[in-house]
Length: 266
Image (cartoon, rainbow, N blue to C red; front, side, top):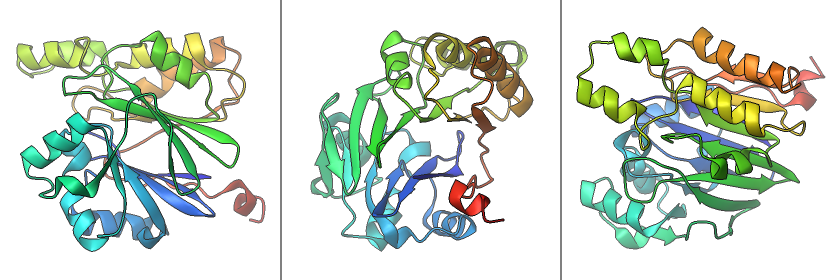
């Protein structure tokens, strides 16, 4: 199972799990042409998608949904009822019947993927993260989560591969020119995980089965890649997991590492 990040940040998010029997899209916050160009950059054919799942209704996660549905009208779209209703109310999609609805903590299948949504704290109706099992491996996905809850960490503990939010550095956020109300929202219990909070989750819950960890949704104004990397790298080392392959995802750069089988041939 290959992980691809097409975009990660407040201007758009889109992630792909690519397996031999199909691929799964997690969120589509990219405009149609940008989505397709990023797929080409990742050497990924979007016709291989067997479904798309959505974490919540903020624009940076769903603003490309209408273009996606128009280009691939038969592609199954999965969301919980509050997210589906909000997406349609926002005008991102004009067909509420296009969604296959799921319930939190209830497993459902999308092609070869067994998907379990779990609750995360964020300032929208019923936001979720995902635990995805395919080919005997478990992928964990949690962005836009305001607090390092044990319920999130327990899902992380099951993962071989994970994408975890590390949105901001607390000092950079505090000294930024952002309005105080926005600062309070970001660091509040229904806002975004800081580098320190991401490190806390890793320090408490990561296990030796974790092989890959991607840090996601970094603020371009209130964070830096080296700050997020250093905070979580130290947590991994303290946990005895320094061998975990740690990467920081970017807003405008595709992350698409070669599968290990191909790496071994080079």
